[in-house]
Image (cartoon, rainbow, N blue to C red):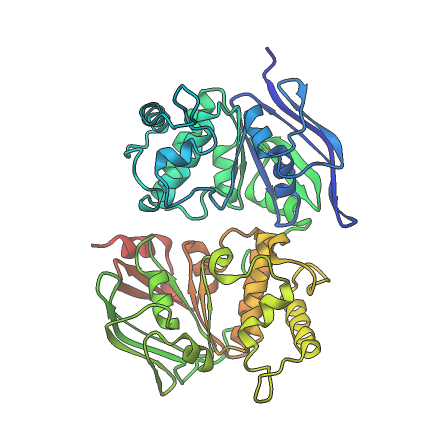
Length: 502
């Protein structure tokens, strides 16, 4: 039997006359891990959606174990042994682990009526969970599991369908470091079972660590392919963006030290969430917020914007005190909040780019007693700010946000707030799930805002990102502030020690 499991050759695909794949081809052997990298919009998702049966190609050939295949839908792909684990997990939180694993192929009782055989369901679910070392009861509701364990449930689903090829799309974006290590151990175990993996990630260090071979896409073409030792992070970046990036973070003129305070937080507490958090944020400053998962970073951001309550303390914008649970007042005082969950909370995925951009500004840009809107003026304003952040499409009034790459979706979230000209911008994981080129553009937008006098609270799980972008870094742990670091004190080890200190 040949070691070759998958052979893709000459894939082409166009949407509305725009060609997004151009003769894409690569090979994957049994029990190996293939890394697929490229900027957002490079064609990675389109290629994988063709393999997973979500899309059909215009031309080209896909061979699985020597036979040509063309799955018409995801069910066809699963029947062929191709499982696709998307970045946004396809689990039902209100159902149990066992129900999610066997959702589309429940074991049935014998007889005319299609009753589920609960005993066999439980037994088979236990066996699937043992294969991935997930020690939870099959009856546990998925909503009670942390994100890392939910990802393992998705893998268990794939294994019950006898998957020969599993595609992972940005699997670590919502995982802690410990959960990521556990995922990598499972992938190594799958490799040992002759299951092949396609691993898509913007975290290039993980790709170099995990994969046997790498394929690089740019503008719908394969621009680089070969064994892992042939690549470095620098070479991957150059292939992905089509040019060398001398530095990952754009330079910023620090300017003169600000004297006033944009945002003042004093002893803000909420039982079980945050405790006695105090800091000042000044105009023209980037204050980074570091900490491990569960440190209270995102919860603090939501409290500051008025989305979640706090029981003690005070939040002031300039001289004005912000009351709890008042996001409208926060917006009126110049605050903007970029949530870490852009798909679930930051965007209306089915709406157009224009509608998403203008939504937070409709009240301010309407007129008259009945709040009449002026569509032409709103459209021009949306187009102006979309061009400012370089959203990569022209027909913004007709293009649904769900069709955009992750990087362009994030730019739309930024654009909708820029239209309000905020003076204080709370950014929660602003570059999560976007490629190195899109990150660089987001960093430049942040620098432009700072140069215009905005104050930035920058929350990130990537210490290198905070070191590259922040003027100061505040470290949090278990809901408390563990310390502040000035730029001259920035040190990865010192920041990690502060976050881990008990």
